Image 1 (cartoon, rainbow, N blue to C red):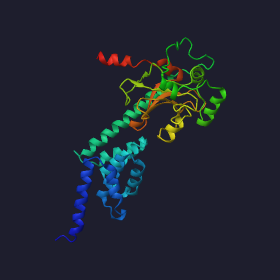
Image 2 (spheres, rainbow, N blue to C red):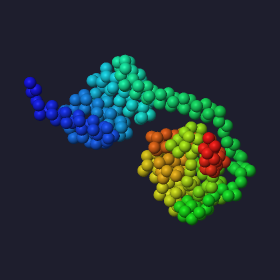
Image 3 (tube, rainbow, N blue to C red):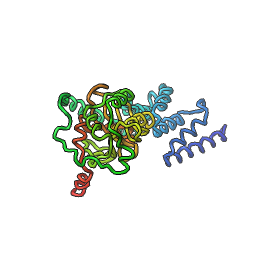
Image 4 (cartoon, helix red, strand yellow):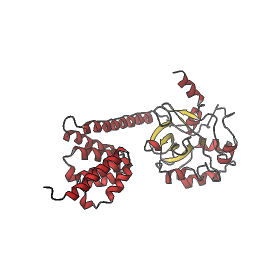
Length: 328
């Protein structure tokens, strides 16, 4: 005879509720529901639900913390290893994740779904390794820009800017001074590329007519290119400028973009992807690469151009890609 029918009934109701919320993908509600229960009353199943839901909510740090608290219980559990490895992977701790995930496969019985799930994560890690190696090889072949060579030799800027009313109101500032450039560099902590300064002295921010750039790998925008809305200038009174209210510091501090350099262009997604000057490999005083950062893809970074001048030279009109798509 059941010694505690009321407790069992409550547990059945809880399991039903958890499954219902999971089917509706309301993992934040699962987290909140479990957190209402004292941790001393959590059993192994509830711990699993909690870590799974934390992962689905993107709270990988907490998922790792809870997983480690129960490491002894999970040492022979393939599902524990999968969930812990998942949190490590999406915390960018790929080497640790791979070790944990391969152990999950060792522990899993033949035919278990967890094997398929783990293999999907291992593919993500392998893709990341290949991308990192491609990046390493590309940088090794990169020819440094000659600092004594004037920027934009032979490039025709006639018709480059679209000076519509919105661009003039939100982007285009007064001609900058050298003191303004120094202030931006001091505030942001990075040396601005000379080609950027050269361009801003002639047109201090704005919206280019050619607003797309080819990309070697797919992004959330397209398979083969990215699009920009405008190029940020250095007039702090303009909303879309490096020190403006929606400028570089705002995107890093408020939107959570990685602090790898300077947000230089916004995109049509209204903040959900950005173009950055990337100083990770050149140092804060070097010549930065230009990259696309995708908030929708966990801030994935995609290489676009070797430097700012190359990026500007590589801009094309979006109609080019529309025509290519129409010809397929």
